[in-house]
Structures are given as structure tokens and as C-alpha cells.
Length: 178
Image (cartoon, rainbow, N blue to C red; front, top):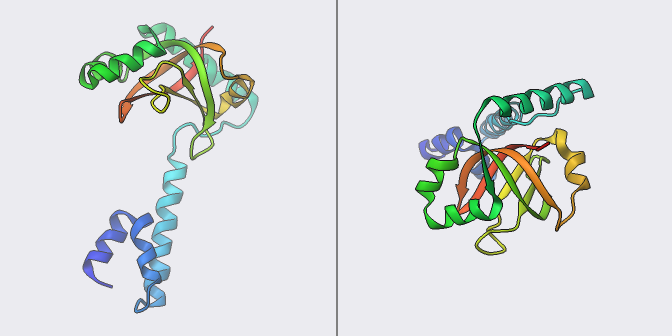
């Protein structure tokens, strides 16, 4: 195994470990490479935020804690359309105003989805186009809430602004307001 392949596997195993399946690599190299891939994926899943709490008491207690925390921290009120417009105009200024801050966002649901890890998120109307609607990630404990939503419903969420991805505003740690 060449030094560049070794470094690639060490740094980004999910991409480079597959090169070990080509001819010329030993069984030991394959086993070690895929073991490293498995370990890094396991650590990523274990360390992933929004893990499912066991028991409804834990879910209720965490929701209460999040709601209490929103009362103690200043919450900026903004519509989904205003948030999208701010990021479209000037990402740096929008990040300074919203990123890392608690937001009370009101808007009309455009779609209800799940991310790669099964966590629910919604998009709200107001983006600069239909492909850049603001996204609001809920933790899994709010899956039932997300399941009751439908496009066109008006909702208000308390979230943490997380900046943007290609001018699409992103928020997480969202909880239903009220």
C-alpha cells in the first residue's frame, strides 16, 4: 500500500478504503482498512447530536429544559422569508445577526423531510427560489410533531441559527413554540 493511499485512508476512510478492493492489496491491508472505516463510522454515530432518548420522561424533561433555556436567552423573532432574504443579500451580515443565536421563526411549511440520520426537518416558504427554502432541523423526539405537519400549515419554532449552505439558511435544535 502506497503512502498516499495510507494517508487517504487515515484521513478520509469512507472514500479511500474502497481502493483496497483493487488487485495488489493484501487481505491484512483490507481488514485493517475496513476496520478503521467501521471504527470511524461507529464513532461518528455515537458522537452524533440529537440521539434518541430512552423513555418518554427523558423526552419530556429535555423538551422542558430546552424551553426553559429559550426563556433565559434572548430570542430574535424573524419570519422564514426575512431569514432567507437576509442570507440572500449578505451572508456575512446574516451570520453575524443569526448564526449561533436563538430564533423564534414563523412561516408556512413547504415540506417535511428526514435527514441522513432519520432526524426530521422542515422547510418553510420564503426562500429566494423553491430549491433554497430555509431548513429547520428538529430532534427525533419531535418526530410525532413533524408527522402531524402538512405543507401550507403556519408554524412557529424556537431554533438555533446555524448559518447557511449555499445561501440556504439552516437552523437546528428546533422546538415548537408555545
